[in-house]
Length: 339
Image 1 (spheres, rainbow, N blue to C red):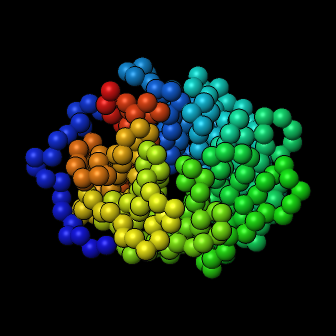
Image 2 (cartoon, rainbow, N blue to C red; image 1 turned 90 degrees about the horizontal axis):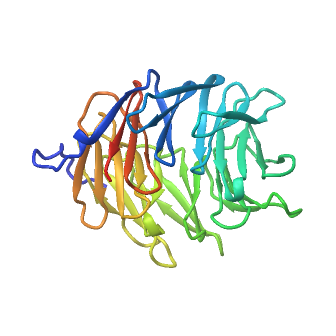
Image 3 (cartoon, rainbow, N blue to C red; image 1 turned 90 degrees about the vertical axis):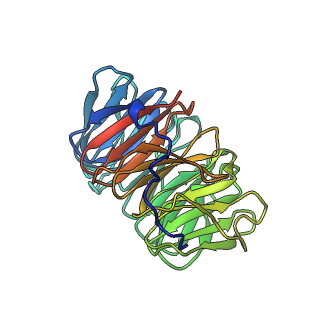
């Protein structure tokens, strides 16, 4: 993947002037939308809620660092080094939904269908539905990632050696998708046919769920820390290189035997990606603070933010695609009004 890196062209269209800037006051480790309200997850204790031009609301939640976050569009779920799991709503209301009896860090969280939630501490994964006590499963190593299948109550748990596919309400042992190495940040494709993990090494690994057939996606210059599916699941957009790398998932074989599409070649590494919910457009955040909006089909670019030093650490679109939020490792943040 060695397109010649470039800086943003002087004539690149820009929407940067449509940004509401936010002083987050702490590193931004995640961002999610609750309707039209951006929820910036901060590295220490709090979530910052930003809606329109109203004053930002800081909601203190954890008694320490926040290590993980996810959202279903109604709640933001967060896990902290205090061993607790909270959900927070658009009005700033928070409630405790889980805690670790051994006070271990909550490394991963996920949201699922019908209000289901999952989290992990050490080698233990937990799932709780809208009713009943959490169910748990211990795996072979520290959990690296969690993801619910798009249909049905099935949880993918990434760990050393692959992924366990767990039906928490069934008595059967989880199905194992195996591949040597440490696996993180697992995701299902939107149609549920594929599972993909980011590995400790500069690579992605995938399986076709129906027959566990492997697919290996390599060639990155660094570990892939951010990836997501374009609208309809045609492409898997990824960070980890000095451009946006998109793997084709249109056919029944996924990316097996195919090369990725690359766009937005740049002078520094892409650190975060987020895909538009309705169009085949990906937002890409770079190590120098630049944000680009990239149309996957033809690589057309729109500038969302000029370089400003600190790396982009979080990106998210609102469900209607009209807002794009970004955050940085030095506590800067913004919401771009697109429609």
